[in-house]
Picture 1 (cartoon, rainbow, N blue to C red):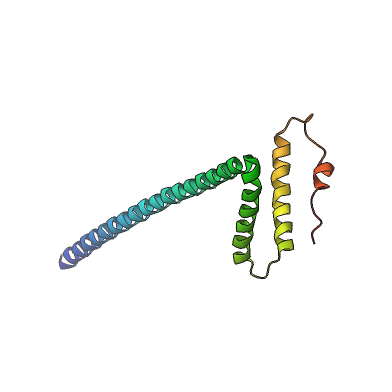
Picture 2: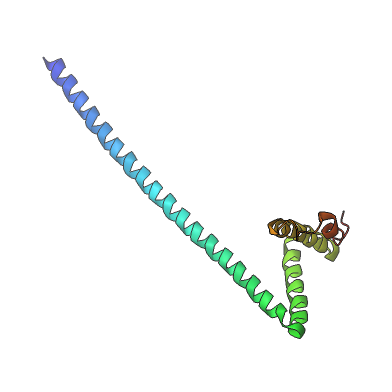
Length: 136
């Protein structure tokens, strides 16, 4: 009889401890899930803001470049600014390496833009690639 009382008490205390542990783990998982969701939302907002800022810069550059005389100076200024930013990331870089990287990226963008044009208005790829500089 004593053994059964002891066994029942042991099982009851084990069940209570397991229930408390399960509640603690459930609350920890809920807190981590909420934090992950909040971090995801904040990241998406930061990404959307960065994309919007980049688009705004591009619109501003296009507007400034559209003005003939100011546009020439603006193009030179923006290119020099972009080169200096690139040079910070590539301290051993040269203007030729920068030009080649810009040309490669520009070729990709031009290819995407040309693919959006109707086929009848789309120039041949060789025509566009002929204007790209030779890079190593």
